[in-house]
Amino acid sequence: MADALRISDVQFTAAPATEERHGLLGWARFVLADTVVIDSVAVRRTRDHRIVLSFPRRADRHSNAHYDCRPVDDAARASIESLVIAALDLKQETGS
Image 1 (cartoon, rainbow, N blue to C red):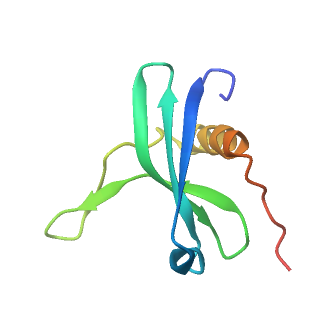
Image 2 (image 1 turned 90 degrees about the vertical axis):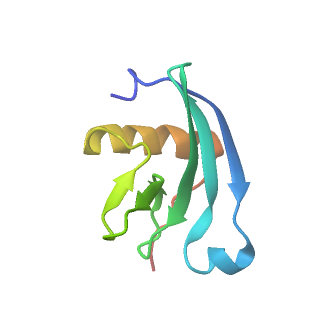
Image 3 (image 1 turned 180 degrees about the vertical axis):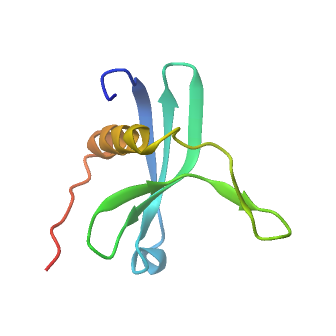
């Protein structure tokens, strides 16, 4: 799947240090397939020290989540995460 995806113009905005303590590293913006800008994707470090992307979503008045954009499946998510994290030159840490 990664070969089929073209991600370019990856940009990163760092989160404030106070948010980094809670796992939020910042936000990514990138261009997908030279046609769509994907913006406001949270870059997070999980409790087991993996770096993951959280795609933007909104909640309706019933607290149901509605994503602005998201990968079509887990394989696409893994491919996009891999490409964006590599472009940002972020390193996965091993948990202790």
